[in-house]
Image (cartoon, rainbow, N blue to C red; front, side, top):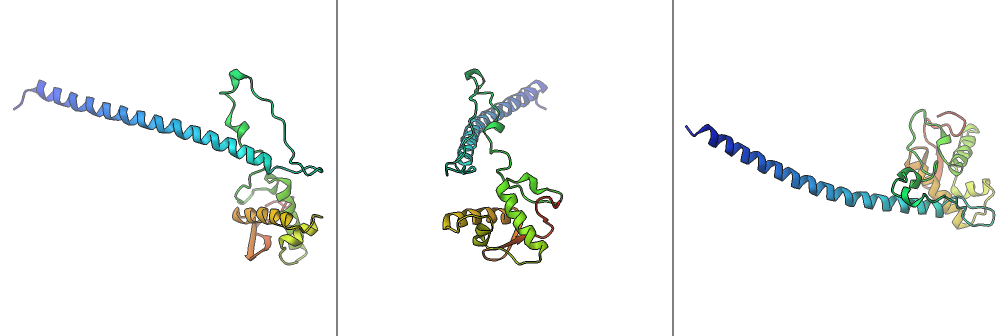
Length: 181
């Protein structure tokens, strides 16, 4: 039978090797985490910029930009990611039972309202060109495509249905703004 001290030394050596392996693995994970956090922050900034560019348009045709106060130099690192995230209501949440249309921006609510009115009047689906005219917009391709993009996003998130290509209706169980989902 081998000496007990020899067995303890072997187990201690094995445990030490395992600790060293785990520390190396933890260091690799920490390095990957740092890279991922930097990438994430870059994407948050990019999303914020896109939100500014695609934000509401004022009467002059320029995109409305909100002036943000820059944090003091010492607080720059502490600025929360929420302040750099997408603006409130600019995201289209996936529809679920009980979710009200008020979580959407006014443009999306307007589309839902138009389709809810059509549904109440038992009229058929709307095309984006018809929506543009209904909203008092030019039926110019750029305006129609902007509406189509919004409508497709609402379809993808479960607010609208597109049973025929280019023809939009409210999805089943969605009742539109003010109707309570």
